[in-house]
Image (spheres, helix red, strand yellow):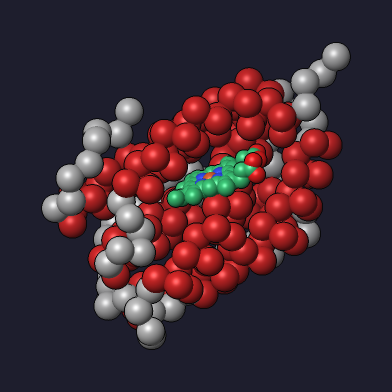
Length: 198
Ligand code: HEM
């Protein structure tokens, strides 16, 4: 029997998620605006670098592209006095046109980026309690809404996608690795201690 792609992605990347989650909890995201700016910069780097993958899947599922989320990130970064993002990643992987139908790499990559909304529900609650007045939380608010409305559409699409699981799983694991690399670059830039990316 064919393995369910969503269940396979979840099972195969759960240890990558655990490792990333542990590193991000260690950062105390809302302990200072600088740490919060590091999180926003990380999410901006991922959304910009991987927009081709995310938006090809989004177009197929008739979901909004990620431009508005990136605009929310920019506004929140400015509110946290971070006028320029802490890293500006190349749009290395957004090579194919958005009009093309998504392949296995697109689905695996988009799984990680869309899935990051799930943590948003939890993070948004913390942000409202812990961040000083005037620091924007538009991005996290949007993630919370996406977790409720967009994630079910995405997972239904994933379950009916006719792609090979192996390249999708490789792409998802690679996206978690990329997230760790971006996080390490951001923490280096801020002079904050961290474990090396694996
Ligand atoms: C401190 C930061 C984070 C926290 C607290 C967090 C927390 C969570 C939680 C609570 C879930 C839901 C698990 C479930 O319902 O079983 C989840 C799912 C997920 N998260 Fe995170 N997360 C964080 C950061 C990230 C980041 C940065 C990424 C990727 C770049 C990510 C990728 C995912 C994925 C792909 C899922 C979906 C798993 C699935 O149900 O298939 N998370 N996260």
